[in-house]
Image (cartoon, rainbow, N blue to C red):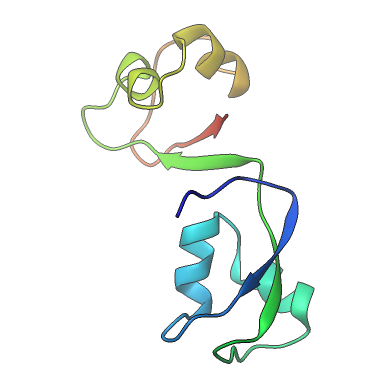
Length: 101
């Protein structure tokens, strides 16, 4: 299944789905899912509203560089830097880099 990033959509809960897995799958937060659906528990077969961010989150790992991350996501170095307000190529382990598609 291809995931298309959108602002908001409906998702049918599958067996064994849980909120944390859906957060990772759709790049959203637990509080967003709970707030948008006024509930904590999910039930197989029900439809829930998912609001997603319009970017992917990438946390810098040891030995990663701007060029390596740009290549990984098929972006130019300039776009990656501009999207994240980076004035230089220096990154820090654990730094959040937003990947806009």
